[in-house]
Length: 211
Image (tube, rainbow, N blue to C red; front, side, top):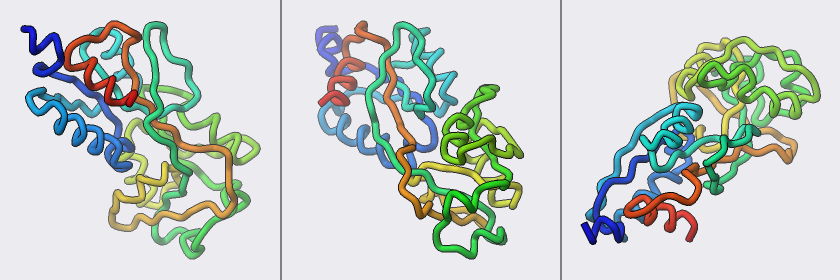
């Protein structure tokens, strides 16, 4: 019990989204934590962002790796930055824009988009997409997982704005193109936890993130 209280044993329950894996951030953190605390068991749960927040508040998760899409956190939660990346455009290999090595924002006007909007979130990426395009985008699909976004894009059913690390997720008929213009809009990943009431192995994990 004393070892568990010091965080030398026990369990850390972690939620994550696909981008945390593609970016390498989750695996880097797990590698560092296991090297420091090899007797702690890590439980991983792939979950949509809203599910993660609910599970953290309910005590079913200790940490969640979530995208920051401009939403405020519920009371009782806190966020630590886990990385930021520029956006890229995913599309089907036969899409006319796939012939370009990079794209300008003007190329995206009037194109149908597939947006990430998990848990029935009507907004999701929309505020960021509006800012990028300077107007209201054409939305073809709203879906709740990264793989669903990529599947629809590969099928040629629309363009998808994705964080740069997602380009590591190769799939048949899918290509990625960078934006030629520099944009202040970035994809941000956060590590979410309860505010101030962790102990034991979970506290050790959070201390590692702070370090």
